[in-house]
Image 1: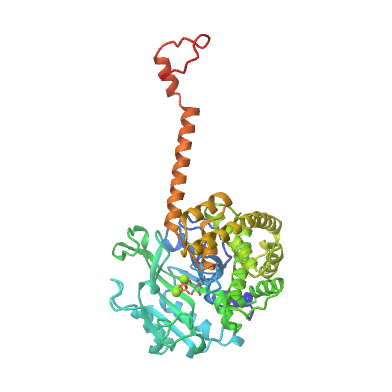
Image 2: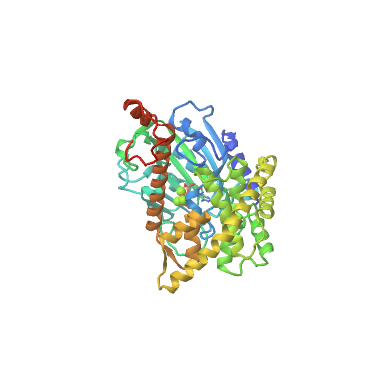
Length: 484
Ligand code: ATP
Ligand code: MG
Ligand code: MG
Ligand code: MG
């Protein structure tokens, strides 16, 4: 089943249960607590918190998400993308736990020829909030546990877990509540037995059902539940990973090999003349390329341009990591003009904006790649030289001074130095680098103050005038005055 079809099935299912189908919001949806939308509930947060009445009692969506937190996982785990799509169903004070669990079970277990996802119930595991973690649930979320038992999940496939996994909130201010997650056992070749508590690679988390009960606006310390206040209504907020369901239903090993992503891996393989599946490190690089090409495309389409601050910096980092990964695969020519169109064509059916925004997107990407290639060429020689010297001196840590010089002279961001040094088996004296950066900032501030003093302060003139008239002696006396 293609990714787009899986998404459609989800929407159709919840539409048949009375949900309004709501289109994805932009990745830049305005939420001051976030850089990018990172969950399906973000555009609904106002309604969930009761700040505004919701136009619907029930809604369903496929939301574009970017999680920069997961950047280091990409290509290494099988399940983390910087960009992914979250399927969700939401209840704004309407149905609650019982329906949320029953419907999720129905959709995942209904055979594919009857509109469901057709997972084998024997492979399904679920988690609920365990006992003793939250003051409101001294015995754990027994209501959720009971409902899972009712739909037919055997007791030994239900695990109670701590707040970290089974109490969801997205920071404050925002709604929160206990949650229950659905996992699919991929079999012994993916890891050890014992359910999600034992192994989250073998047991793949596909869906998180959040039972929102609390408003964490009032919370001062992040996990201080005692001072959270009850929400005005009990809400349902669920999030299922579209790519994760796709990887399972398509029988592939990871989310980068699904139909919406894999052709970029194939292109990277073709460009580099390397075979995907032949070498672990090269495979990780190709997966990073495929993931980052897609997230960059989606971010640029929604209006982000590469830069040095916040959103722009995330994008810059993603684009640069693609260029570097391709270099490590042996491709030295410009790569983005060849890779981005592949991703564009894969995403265009679902997100037509990738076509209408294309000229701007490819223009910005090409310019960024050119600049970065210049930076790389000059900086890499210096870095290699520094690595050789460091090793020769019997050390395995590149000095903060060197890292700073790379930054200052060649525009090498510290992330890049850290990554490139790590590839050669070296650490970087990060504290040393930070200290030099802080010093530089201090100097810049002092310079700015000095300049400001010279150009805009009138104090000096006021002081002079207070001394009375100053006779001009320059015609007769050329000595330097010792004071003014
Ligand atoms: P994990 O524990 O695997 O990191 P999570 O618990 O952080 O996932 P949630 O915040 O519960 O994820 O998000 C809801 C769903 O979104 C998850 O069940 C998963 O299917 C999907 N998801 C989360 N993060 C990613 C990601 N980086 N890439 C792809 N899908 C994701
Ligand atoms: Mg996570
Ligand atoms: Mg999880
Ligand atoms: Mg989760």
